[in-house]
Structure formats: structure tokens, C-alpha cells
Length: 123
Image (cartoon, rainbow, N blue to C red; front, side):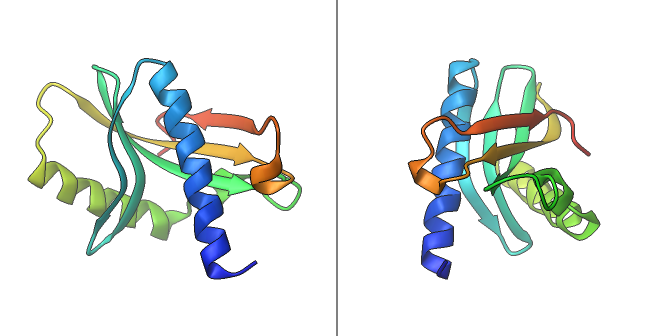
């Protein structure tokens, strides 16, 4: 799979997660938010929490679950990027938290019913 195909597949997974979050009453504030520290896939608000969501799309969990890819180095990048976002876009009254969304799509974008797992307050 080329880098472009992988990015397209990743954006597709992020769009699926954003759609599910909207159905749960969340408002998507940013998608693919970038800073000099890194990128946050989705930033959403549910009225109580400001969710910084890392999306991991996999064909299966046979090798390792998606959340396992969010190691200490990745978590630090996410924290630094979230701090930058909050400095530029204060969200008074919302408690920040970090979530991980896993999307399992064995046939990529051709998967009719991808499987989702969502880890609230993952780290």
C-alpha cells in the first residue's frame, strides 16, 4: 500500500469515527489538527469533555490492538499538540481527555460493517 493510499484509508477511518461521535451528540471541532508537535486526528466536544481522539484503523487485531500503537512517545506528542490547541482555542468549562478509537476494516474501504472499539480516557 502506498503512502497516499494509507493516508486515504486513515482519513476514511477518521470520517467513520467522526460520524459515530456526531450520532452520539458530539460536535467535531477539528479534524487532522496539526501543530509543530504532531497531529490529533479528531477534536470533539460533548458538552462535558473536550475529546482529543486518536484513530487507529487496522485490518484486524491479530498482530496487536490499535491502541497498542499509542505508545509513550505518541502520547507525549498528543499531549503537546493538545496543549497547543488549548492555548490557541481555549475551551472553558470542558474537561480535556484523550480517547482512542479503533476501527477494524478487513477489506479496507470495501468493508461493509467495520468494527469499532472506543477507549474513553485512554491515557
